Structure formats: C-alpha cells, structure tokens
Length: 266
Image (cartoon, rainbow, N blue to C red; front, top):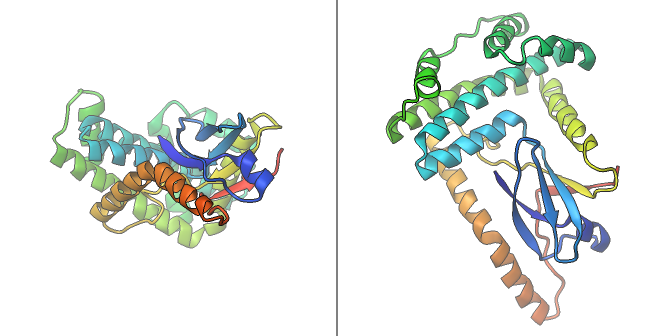
C-alpha cells in the first residue's frame, strides 16, 4: 500500500509543508516512514481502519487484473469489518478495553466466532437480524480454500457484493452510533502512535480514498479510486515542477499535503 507524504519535521520547522514530496509504502501497522533530503525521518499514521485499507488493496488488485488477490483482499476486509463492528457495539455499551481484549483473545484466530459475535450484537443493538449474502462465503471458499482463480467479471461481482455489505452496515453504524464509531478509530490510531519512538515527528492522514466517500455505486467508487491513484503517481513530480516555477518568480511555496496533520512529539 502507498500514500502521498511530505517530511513532518520540515513541516514543523517551517510552519508549512515543503515542496519535497514522496509516495511511500505502508503495511500492516498502517504507518508510512519518510526520510527527506535533509535526513529527517518521520512517520505518517494512516487513520483508516484496517478493513478500509484491505478494501483499497483489493480495489488496486482488481484494477490491475489480479483477480485472486482482489477476492482475497475483499474477503479479508469483510472479516476485519465484522471485528470492527464488534468493537463499535462494545463501545456503545462502554465495555472496557481490557475486558474486550480478553474476550477477543478467545476468538481472534477463528473468524466464525467473530461473525457469531457480530450477529448477536447486531441483533441486540439494532433490533434486527443480519443476514449475509450467501454468495459471498461460497465464492470466498472457492478462491481461498480451493485455489480457484476467478475471471475478472466474477471477481468484480464478488467485490461488489462485499462492498455493498460493508457499505450498508457502516452507514447504519455511523448514523446510529457516530461517537462509538469514531472512538474505535481514534483509539486504534492512538495505540499505533504509542508504539513509535517518542522523539519521532509524526502526522496523521486519511490515507485510503477508495471507501472514504462511501459511494453508493461500486463502479463509481472503483473509477474514482483509479483516478486518485493516477493523480498520486503524478503528484510528486508536478509539485516539484510547480515549486521550481514559483521559486523562480520569488513567491512562497505552496501547501503540499492538505489531508495530513502534524502532531506534537510524544
């Protein structure tokens, strides 16, 4: 996974982002590390929850024609979304983090238990049973357990169905439990930030864009993501060119990363 970034330390010293920019990778910890030409090393924490990152990874694979990888990423996204929902439901009941961690430890390695917890809590908190589209586990088992390589059409159909499931429930949770939803994201971000060296400059970024707008139409979401990915590829060279042009005219440098926010040192 990749994200657009600038040096946080240069930003903090100058009071604004510099023209030097990067497209950097991040992985499971959802932290991208940047080293600028001045030798500064800083961190960019991706705010997006894990399921959104997996959706974006799957969307990229789907666009690039890696159908098996796309299906696997969307399948993993749905499982992590169920886990996220369980956290939101528990937060609405003010369950302590310590008790939640002990409870989840017993189901962390078994997705069936996590889905069961989600089903029970969904019924308790929303007053209606949740019924999963059974086409999803059938297709998923064929790809994951039998090694079936889907066609682009079947992979896209599967990803569309997963997207719809996640979109529908996430919108309901945001409507009914916005504070709990955002608190789960905030707590996860804080936990990951606490694992960084105390003296490392850091910033936060939305990071992912595929699910952020929550487009109703899957094809629209995919198309907008493809455009955004292309823009990210071009951004560093365009910013450098524009900065050089501005500098030659004696004007101040432009702001480079509008969606990132520097944090104080911890």
